[in-house]
Length: 332
Ligand code: GAL
Image (tube, rainbow, N blue to C red; front, top):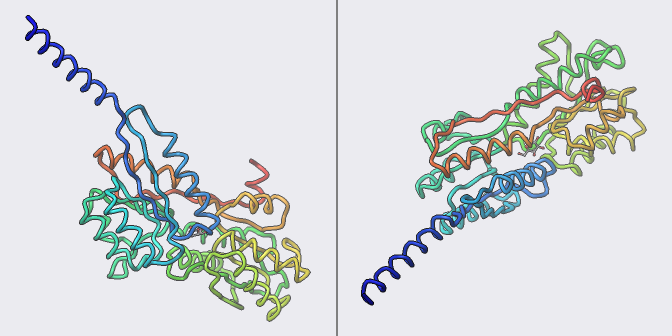
């Protein structure tokens, strides 16, 4: 009898241990590396990514999220990725410092058998093609971003839609300066190209007075715009900035030079940072383009969770930009 009771007890204990185990949540380790924490747009993006992922936790699925600052240094980011691999991350979310280093980094992560979600900076394959084969051929790798051609086109269209279509002095051409983001980044390349293309496609003549690299940075944007205003003065009719960070800097330079947006100069950015939307509303900026950090971060997290669950994903998730001019802001 005693023996039977002892066996029963052991069986019951084992059963309850099993029950506890199955009710226990699995915590997934998520490694995120962002190219640079000081970037305005990527700060909004990473904060939303973290809070959205946390909001999706369930009784049996928890997330232990580590977010690293790659400090705009590819060697630093490679080290972070290698540490993620040794730490046994269950999924990696990567905002590349250098898109041209994509092959090497992606290969290491894929070889370690860790699913990968690339965000914001579309990797460039060795063949110079943005449709990187390492993504297309891999069921556990995807890219979440936006088509920067669209944002550039919207910037140009907002100039075309102005009554004088940007030709303030009526000399028959739109004289502009371009303040570019990181030139290695497809967003900078496409925005630079397509903003101007929208003008020429509409049949307007253009004149580029200055084209400089501001690396997405506000202080640099201010400095470059101030220099251009000193060198070209009233000849500058339109200031195209590849992002709002640099446009904020340009706005300061424009005010310091005694110029007035909407009257004797036009200013365009991309991202639709809150302060820039406010400036579009007040007329201090001609327009910006919503770079949907909410839509993009959610798509990235949704894809990461699918990968954790072993569900099928798509290789590319592309989120639309939205044109943010005064009419749009007033209608909100
Ligand atoms: C762009 C964004 C910029 C900057 C850049 C970083 O999409 O417009 O502000 O964040 O990404 O790669």
